[in-house]
Image (cartoon, rainbow, N blue to C red; front, top):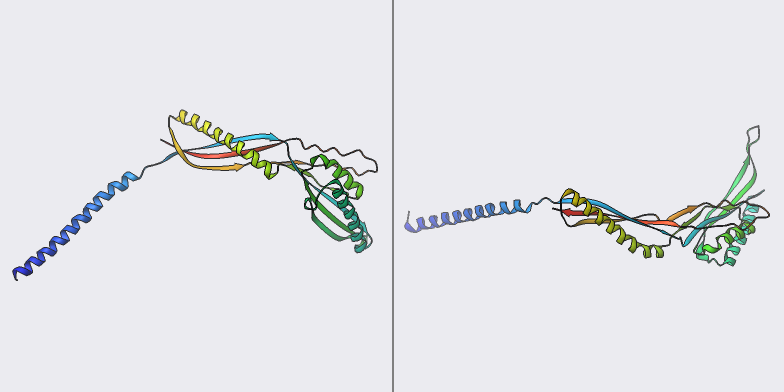
Amino acid sequence: MTQETSNNKLYIVIVFLSLAIVLMAVVLYSEPMDISGQTEEHTLVVSGSAEKSVAPDTASLSIGVIVQAPTSKEASDENAALMNSVINELKDIGLEDKEIQTSYISIYPVYNYPEDGVPTIEAYSASNNVQVTTQMLDVLGDIIDRSTAAGANQIGGISFYVSEEKQKEYREELLSEAVNDASLKANQLAKGLDVNIVGVKTSSINEGGFTQRFYAAVEFAEERVATPVKPGETVVSLSVQVTYVID
């Protein structure tokens, strides 16, 4: 073996040893770093809430006409005439087309079941309902009274609620109060546990209901006084859930 060949082999061995040492150093250095980075995070989960009594600004109610006649055409024609009269009354009060929406239409036979067990059709029933949604709460009594006078004989429950525009006005105030409520509870809890709050990890908002239900009982009589309708107040609410980081 020549001196040159021996030197080459020695050079290769030295290179491999150097690489091995470098790799070992990297492994030994990285393991403590990984371990030191694994810190356990402690948290407190707290809920906060806020509510406010407000007057609803929107109402929705169902108004319908149901009639019976010997034939389906007669029932349909009579129903259509009465419903058109009802809709005209609603528009005379000041309602717009966008506030009146057809919600249900049906025509079906009415059967008679004699003792011999053979059913026969004795009439046809036609129904037509519209859903009225308006912010003119001061005319709700007129809407009911004039509708029934025009031929409506089906009045559904009245729903009072707060419009989206009004909800936006209250949302900021309620959110601030709910966050303050959560913060107060978290600080009290942290003090009792002898820990410190150092940050917020997550938070979420849960909006409560803005709707109050009212069901109007309408008596259909030839002589009746004006129907009183009072929207009263409804409670709007909002809650938050906050996850605090503690040490």
